[in-house]
Length: 373
Image (cartoon, rainbow, N blue to C red; front, side, top):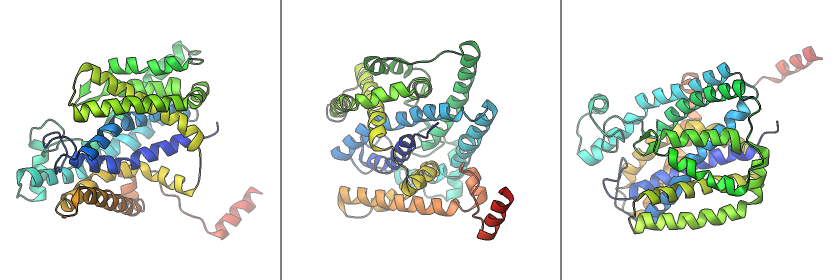
């Protein structure tokens, strides 16, 4: 099967977007709306963060479902489960123990005037009762919730897929209309209320993963999304503009706003998949590098950004200046850290990276070619 490079490119572009998104959260909502450091509400940055949130993480779950289908063409169930454990569960445990306490320490100092040592806070991290956000200190999975959710969803989906292949071997979703594709936001909306923990619904992300596997990985469906990409873009922009305005500037909160939130997020997904096929199906050194780096960068970026924000907020350069400096410094620092840890075998293991390939010298290559001949 020919590799769909636009899926890889959408993934790493969405992860790079996390730098400006999380930086904007420093100026989003009120003081108690939540982030590890907070300045004040800036309406532009608040609107930006609000406009991005409904589709960027949901897109990653859909892409994970699509990738699962392609992966199972060349992996057994056991291989897939072992790979998910290595790539998701181990980095989650490592990140919660090593990386997340850095962020909660900053939060304790910033909001609570904490004066103890980092190691004393480390004990507090596991004993302080919180709402699991960690925005004011205490235990939290932080941004690594995505790894835990995706691990649980991947193994659950693997069981569902195995049962489907056994009892419904000819089951296939194909030939569906564009209107039916739009209407899929309704079951996602309903599932949003299932196992919703702190605003992050296991049910919603599970159905999006299955949509990716059973529907959006189908070539006929993808071609239809490509055909109607401009209509999708129009609906996405209209619904997103209405949602962002009502949420940020009218403070509307209701069940219908939740429905609009889901609709806008879903339209964002099918828009990006449609446009991605025509604009992002490219493969070069840059895309290869970011594709390989995106996963460890996701794990590493948040503590770097929070520490950067803690110090940059003290600089008298205005909101725009602080925002840009935080984004640039945290992005550069994260990729530098990635370059370092990617060269250390044990850290590669804990961050879910595959073994580093060692370049062979010319003599060895020539010998192998001779053996093959």
